[in-house]
Length: 187
Picture 1 (cartoon, rainbow, N blue to C red):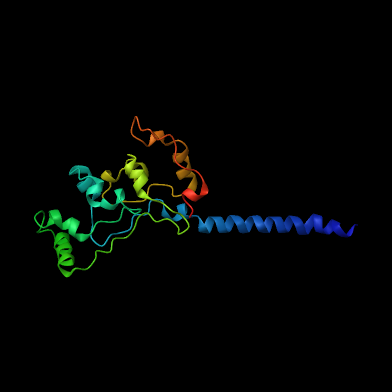
Picture 2 (spheres, rainbow, N blue to C red):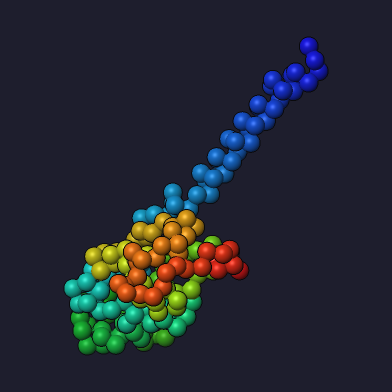
């Protein structure tokens, strides 16, 4: 038997299987979709997008004003809520809690639904300002009592839209495609 026979028969296949098992295990454990699709944390104060954005038809940009002028859409300040709730539903227990937070000048610590890894750069401005509806990425929020993550946050999802954005843009939009070079999203 040649000295390399054992290497080729046993060591290399066992090593290859070990590397493959390690890669699959790390990929499975680190896979964000397995943990976050459907993520809908309980918020400090229950807020129904079904009521506000759905039934009352309050536009997304009324509360998420920074989406047109900042990288981040941001959650609204308590002041934004109090624009209406200073007068509306003031006897509701949660609105009373909201008013107390407002009076104390403390922030309301909402829990984020969507969050990207640090190595990914995303800017709401070009997306919102080109007419892409919020629902294209965030789902039919106007039908959700508690917002949940519905978008696959994998790179392939973003690239599919950048390569063929027509299904997400309003009819007649001049945009043919988004950038697909690495620096567009990884800075």
